[in-house]
Image (cartoon, rainbow, N blue to C red; front, side, top):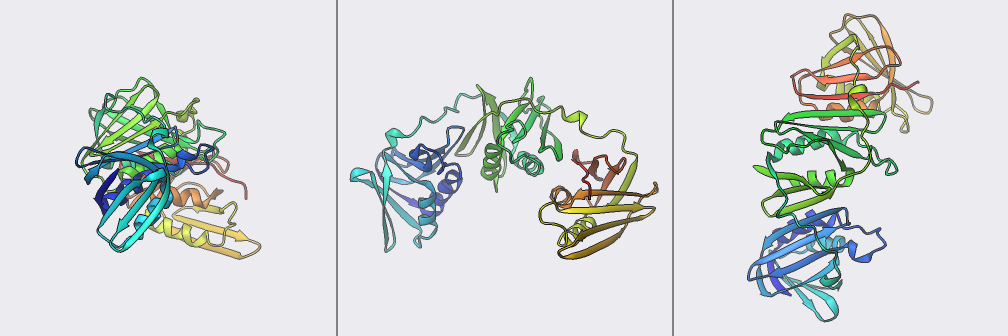
Length: 367
C-alpha cells in the first residue's frame, strides 16, 4: 500500500472513524482504523466496535494497492500535527506504516488488514431520503436525556419512530424525558419504533456535522443505516422495551407559566452557580406575574433571581435539578417557553411557544 492524500481529506476520514475505535476492548484490532487503497484513486477509512461501524471513502493518488490497520487515536493526533498539505502513507515490512509530510516522518506499528472484522454491507439496504439538518436537529434535542446507565440499555438509547410522513425521537433517563417530532415525508415506514444506542446516535450526529442536503436512512436486519456522500454508518439496534412514554407526559397540569426563554436560561445559569454540584437543586416559586429561582448551599451561600412572567394561578413552590432545565432550554430557539405545573410533587412539562413539536418532562426533587 502506498498513496498520497490531501491532509484535510485524511483528517476527515480519521475524524469520523477514530471515535468509534474501541481502545478498551479486549480485541486489540478494534482500537485500530482500517485503511485500504484500491484502484488509482480510492481510499477507504473504516472503524468498528462490532456494534457501530463507520466507513468513509476518499480520493487519493494510489501508487500501490493494499491495506493496513493502525491505532486510530494515535494516527489522528499525528496527522493533526502535520504541517504539509499532502501526506504520504505507505505500508512497509512487518505491517509498519510510514507517514511522510513535508520534512516530517513517522513510522507507526500496525496490524494486518486481513485480521480486521468484516464490515457490514450497506449497499443493498433499502433507504429513504431525509434532510440531514432535520435528522441532526432531532438527535441534538434528545441526546440530552439519554441514560448513562449501560445496565439499562432500553434507556441508554433513543427511540426512533417513523410512519413515512412524520418521525419522532424520544429519550429518557428516568428523571427527565425529551420528545421531538418533525415532518419527514418519504421517510422510512417502520411497523414499530427502534432503539438507537447512545454511542451509535452520537456518531450519527457527529457524521452529520456540517453536512448539507439529503441523507439516506434505513433499518434492515437489526441495524440502522445512514448514508450520504462518501460516508456510510451502520448501528446495531438496541434491545429491550422502551417505556410507554405517553403515560409519562403530563396531561392535566393546570398551572401554566409563560416566560422569555433567554431570561429564564440566564437566570438558571446564574443561580445554579451556588447550587450543589451533586444535585443541582433549585427552588422555583411562582405567584401572579412573578417567578423566583433560588438555590441554597450551606457551603457556598444563597442565590435568588426574580423574573416577570405570565401567570395567573395560585402560588406554588417546587424543586428541580437546574441542569435538566438548562440542557432543555439550550435546545429550544423560541423567544418564549411555557412551563406547565401540577402540584409540588408533579413533573413539569416544558414546551417552546412557537409551535415546534418539542417538549421536555422534568421530574421534581425534594429540597
